[in-house]
Length: 262
Image (cartoon, rainbow, N blue to C red; front, side, top):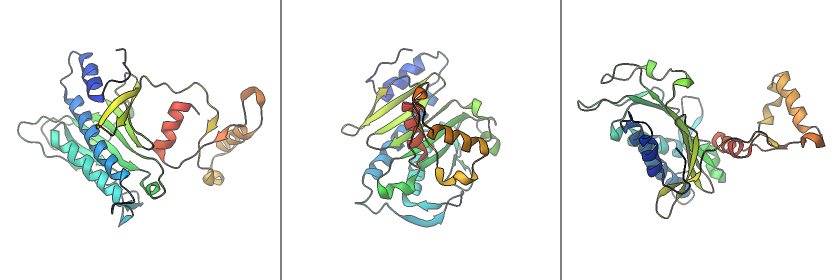
């Protein structure tokens, strides 16, 4: 399918679905749920500092990290949006100690599970640094109509049916792929629509930056240390030294590297 810059995310999803004769629309509906939750989370992030949404909840997440209020809020919004439409039978989230099972209604035949970090880098919100949501979608491997099981989540990456992220920054973008290329959509907050702004994204073959937390340099393997010295060494023929760019927010760093190369 030839992408057309400027169409809405909803229109794009429908066009993609038309390219697959056996598509039932369930994945499209699931992506629409993510789109809705992203808009709600974006609204709250943009009000950070003038509403009581900053700071810690006083609890730790499953990774042992201090849970922020926005972590909890984003988790609840995505969980509610994914449960509402019936396409998702379970969710695994960084903010949940165990996976969440959405009990199927008699008429529902949910066949997807979602794994996500609802708000990566949330501790950076206090200083107005871009943060993001990361998501991955799989088809369940246990029988449809039964409660979701751990095996549904412990699947290799090549079985993903879709994956992507939302970056909440100077503009809010949703970037995703279903295995047929990568496309980015920018939110127009005046009307609440995501528009195709970055069609068929391809990471540049080469770049002039490197991105790493050099605070952990002493713990890096010898090969990584050697490569960093290579990046820092002057060489006009290969445009070195490279520039170091490290934000400390995974989605932000990945998004920059995807667009600019590394």
